[in-house]
Length: 234
Image 1: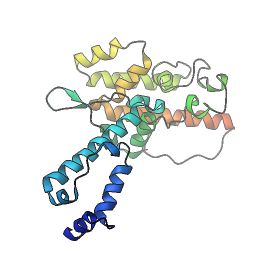
Image 2: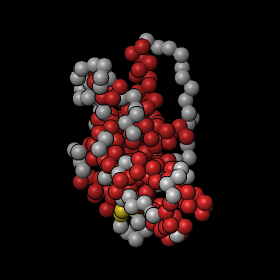
Image 3: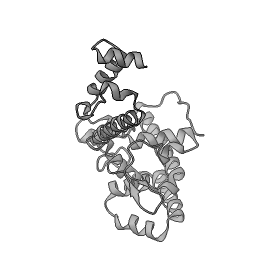
Image 4: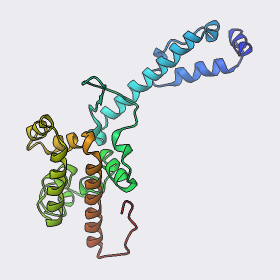
């Protein structure tokens, strides 16, 4: 290690020089203070460099998520700090990634990342407004908020929604119910709140999975049938 530092000090290629180049190539890396050659042997200075890199990386990732319309369900997300408050944590194993059932977990993740099969997404660039209308009720655009909480065009969907709502309410505290009901009519915000409700994540994931299957069945119906697809999470 000392040899590499000495080479860097004399202007020769070394891993120290390569590290400096890599740090400066990072998004915002020009703002990171890179140690002088001699300081690379100082553990405290290297620890500070690592912290600076992680801080810039978090800022970059946070800005990317917040600036993406497709990731709108992730905007402004916070984690419990263990003291009754909340804080922003950019890198963390999220509660919805801990759902045990893989089919349910993947279905919920697809909703969170707007990677679902609803018409408002899959027909965004291939069809006009009429093509994006809800295939269950032919009303508003077939969005997550509409299908999850509003659509009344499918009896099975309505029954499954009622079951899900009762499951969630049975888990919620009085304060959580008040907050949820306070968003009445703001369906997007209600879905966003439900997605962030940690205690209900398993039933929310199961709901996402069941609705995903209904959408796939509707697609199959539109195609006039076809081979059954294998399903995860049975």
